[in-house]
Image (cartoon, rainbow, N blue to C red; front, side):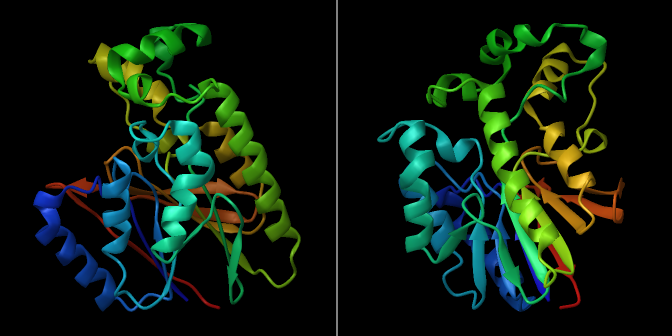
Length: 267
């Protein structure tokens, strides 16, 4: 089973020729499934266009939202999250992994946006947790454009609980041999860059990941691969998990073009 993951399109009409090249490369890989791991585009019309790029790729298609997809405009962030984005994705032929886990043969797919909970904050700053909601406006546009009523940590806990239930169901399913986890935000500390020389980026680090999700994933006996986006810095890591080594990747972005992660698995 071949799964292809991309992320962080940040769709802009001026870059359509570059996106067409990305789609051609993905189609040439002949995937069994394609997963877009968030930050497709905003406002909503660009989110739609971003997903419509992949209409000619003949495989099952999945997505998880990213923080930029939830930027308010014609709709508030809560409405985008709860109904508008899932409906727009469905109309474009995509299934939302935030709503349910999926099995393709013996491979399970489990995904979530994974909102940040400040667990990736830079330890050398020695700031209390309750400093980070106020600091966000100085370094991160989410403070201006994500207008839902929940705090960051409350949303992170909610998503982690729901993801944990979906992952537990895959772990308990005897037909599932292994699980691919796809998140927008990274879930392992080793993946998130450190910036000891920059106060700006050291503060920003708090809004880059969710380590509680990583703890849940490492406890699973079936997770073999994790792919994330969000930070635009690609790479590969080996993470120790309950079932053995987890192959962890981050989809990078280079010259405004998102990268591609290809996973070839039995099943």
